[in-house]
Structure formats: structure tokens, C-alpha cells
Image 1 (cartoon, rainbow, N blue to C red):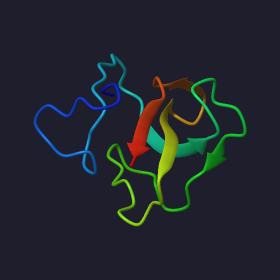
Image 2 (image 1 turned 120 degrees about the horizontal axis):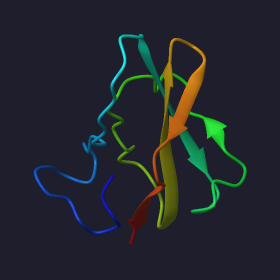
Image 3 (image 1 turned 135 degrees about the horizontal axis):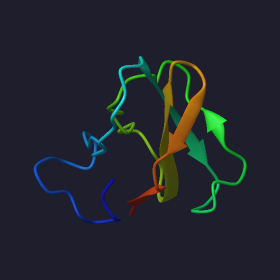
Image 4 (image 1 turned 180 degrees about the vertical axis):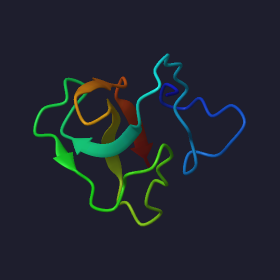
Length: 88
């Protein structure tokens, strides 16, 4: 994920995280919204289960925090860093 304000190769509403994995297992994805960069009060985003997530365009002014959890074969998982979206 890219830090706040950095959007190489795309727009703030269509970023894809970069990750490398070595496994023959099936990967599943789930995006979460949270209260801060420490992932407090994390909540699954309904229907956001692809490797890319489109940030809603109707957000009001403020900071929004998102991260992706990638799971292999329904067992082992890893979280990305939190992406901070600032709406002014």
C-alpha cells in the first residue's frame, strides 16, 4: 500500500497492494476499515473480498484507515500495513 498522498500508477480510489507469496495454496482476501493506524476497532467491509478495493467516493472530510488481510488455504494470514486516506 502507498502512504497517504502517494498514488503511483493510479488514483486514490483504485490502489492495489503489492505482495509476493510462495505457496500453492488458495489465497483469499478481506478488506477492513479501522479507527487508526494501529488497526483498532477493525471491521470487515462487506463484499470487499478481492485483492483490490475501491475507496468510496462519498466520504466526508476526515481520515479513513483501511487494510487488507490475505489468508492462505483458510489457515495462515497476514495483514498489510494500514492505508490512510485523507479527505479534505
